[in-house]
Length: 276
Image: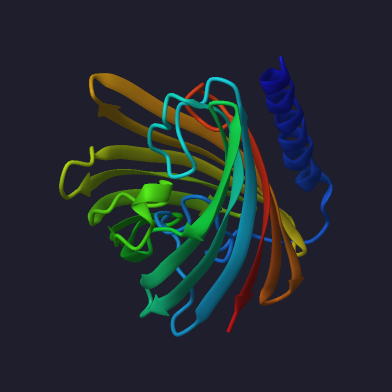
């Protein structure tokens, strides 16, 4: 019931947010400066040439009962009955030419697990990611992009903050944007070295710019993999609002609600992005 209620609240917030732009009076339009949260590195949008964008963000998560996956997104130990914590990221991106973007993501995990009736707390750095992508216009309002993510084994494996293996995630994405609206998505396949199972990933995203001061966004994000004969399908919806405090300073509150039982129950977070 609580999970259904949270999803209902988030759906209501999204519906209200998407209805607001109809009353807006200015001529605001969606641009590549309007970005999603979880799949930022994969979407078919890039930072302007020669610009550096730096975002600091954090999200707290809760999963009470039927804990199947940990914060890293892989199976939790069977003895874990409750999981909570947060992920804090530093995300940097640089506009390479007119159609490229390179960047990095440095995550830090704070985790609290209920294991056999005892609370276990851990915190440490996770696996650092590097990425690059290029986009290409295929129609007046539509672009496609292709890129590659490299995951490095910097996370502490014994704390479940890293896999201990390198991974590459080739992906393709597309985005249609016209006026106030944008719609896009991606598909990718994360290939791990060693014994870690590969992970298919995908997303669907929508952005509506209500005015020059704010934009409403939502993304459906999924992961699918199989481990020891068990299939895991981790799907969440993430609504959010971008408040443009200045032309280069954005406040980004974001929510998370699970669609499948494998995913964490819910999450709340915020990002602060500055473009130089």
